[in-house]
Amino acid sequence: MLRILKLLPLFIFGFVSAQEEVVHSVYFDTNKYNLTENQVDDVLKFIQSTDSVRIESISIYGYCDDRGKDEYNFKLSNNRANAIKEKLIENGVKSKIIVTIEGRGRVLIEDDIDNISEVRSKNRRVDVVMNFKEIPIEKLEIPGVYSEIHKNHVVGDRIYLEKLLFEKGSSKLTMKSKNELDRMARQLLKYKNLEFEIQGHVCCTPPFHKEAIDKHTKKRKLSVNRAEAVYKYLVFKKVPKTRMTFKGYGNTQPLGKGSDLDRRVELVITKV
Image 1: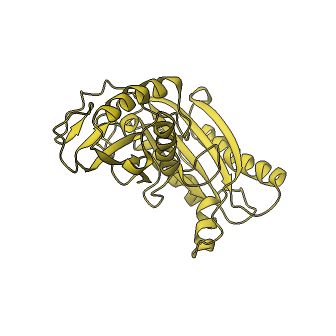
Image 2 (image 1 turned 60 degrees about the horizontal axis):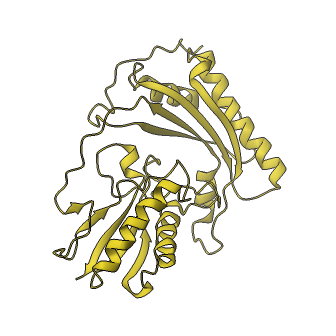
């Protein structure tokens, strides 16, 4: 029988002082939702490796591959999420900190993917998302990174849109984000010589998933969609298309300042 869960002091994530969210994924065979003992042990080790004082909540999201009917997939993904929840509670995790148990159904994939079997196997899973109490993030001070556009930029300078932060899993622009882009558009129209790439970023995905799923499209293109959303808004604000491109970089370029700042879009100067 599995031992009662005892949450231990932080040691794995101790070097990332502003870490606010980490993810552990559990993978299932086709049409299955029962857990093996090894799977349960892995989830418990993930929980045990964190600082119990900082845990604010746990969210559990179930997924399926792209085959089968929607009704069946939603039921199966929900069963997978609930199987994880039940094992956590059995082993000492308090139910009140498990705030979300959600089956999200199937994950859509592109038709021209070469390794379709591998992609499908990674989509038959549950993500256990550990959310931590927020720690104040130090002022962003990184060489070559700016919060304003000026006339003396050089190629490679990055404009960090500090007030353009996205909700988890979303590429939708909030009103606050649009206000930030309105300000940025005015600066871009002032300095007409600058050309730039709009770079989208995500946080908190497992290491083998460089990209995250956009909850609105169900496809693993979240950073691309975030960058494209900014591109389209700037076009709407009369910034010429010829001055800008957009690209998603997934989780490959973390700032090391916490998950909120990695869920971002930047402008990178490509021509002055």
